Length: 595
Image (cartoon, rainbow, N blue to C red):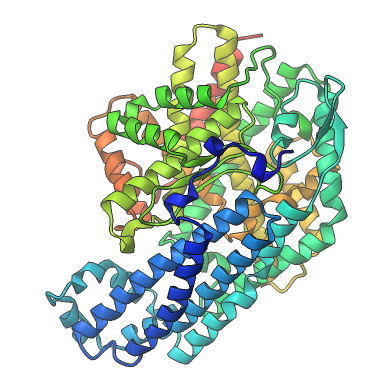
């Protein structure tokens, strides 16, 4: 594993585009530390006039934008090497400053809500620029039943830093401290299991390698089950605490309300997938037959069902493939992709201490960034397309929306990324004339459904069950969590798959569980993306322009309404059911191609 300092500059993201260096961060930090004290000048005066209200909201926007830069820069520096003490310290300071700012601003919402409605409406008709904040005020008014008095809001703001420890503990444990055993590869060479290469090892044609990687990784997590159960329980309890404090009926209701998503969307997802688990059971049977196995185990789920078609792709090849596959999105979209590829938006390869997985992030006013741990597999080519989908969504939202409304809601965050993947797989399937290669690609598309629509829904059901259990006052012990997780695996995958004991510990390594009620949005986003990509590829009138409007929309509308611009109505079960029908047709196609 290379050290961070050994990574070539061309393969590192250019964070200097955000802030010139760490010294610039320090200067901005000191400035912002002083600036947030100026929030006090508006306290008690926001309801006096339209000018006072506008000045307060404008000042809050400006402060928030600078805080975002401080927070994002420090976190991304830490993510590139989580063992680097300097960036751990910088990120901790950024968190503390964000908490201090939240404390300083805690009076604002109660004070705005205390303004008599008639007077507030009069303020909003002024010509002093306040109309810019109309939607923000509307969103705030919708939360009026859940906004506390000034003293209570201050107390909740003060508690934020103290209650965020669980996620940070997990991040440090999972990225900086945990280490996995070394196994013997199919070529006889030793391979150290890492977060970055684990899935690649599960894709190995050598079953012994797959099993060793699977048992090796989860054998480590098993040793820390009690610690990780306590860590996750603390995360769940803080989510429940804030939901109760704000008078929500549950932690789920609180989380979904923050994103303006009706709870029925969550329920419809779980119900629709549950009703169609026979398709996943059928997929398991198809996989078992294709691999010629008497018993199909959890470690057999990732290896391709088609042998001899595997390829390795250099990062240059991956970029070219992604560009070609996304041509249906238009020339301007292509130019922005090329800019991202050539101007070091991307941190490409794994290094010691680097955060696992992949993401796209950034701060308003600077181009977006992408973190990868590129391994050269087809999956990683798709990861590049996926994360650049996020990046392009951010780019267009930031370009067409002011800071106030540029940050799109999490509910729609997975749509653009998954749409890119759907367009790319369709392109590759149509391009090849080789039956085995096409079968391999259909296998990959099926895996996208299994890994995103089914698996993330299973995660969402687990998370919902965990929060419900805690809300009933029941203990979240390691044994209880492992038993719940194993049972769901058995139900989702069916009797044709052996639910190995090790799978009971998989929940311990899922970072997104530390962002409550996030994972379901992968499944809903995937379903929406399948619909949107189909409309674009079919040349439906207005499909591409509607999608462009969606990408530019930021948070100017509730997310369900934004998706309607792209021709998808997630307030109904139809998109999820339609996506499941596509999965069924792909299974038919795979079986029809024979051996």
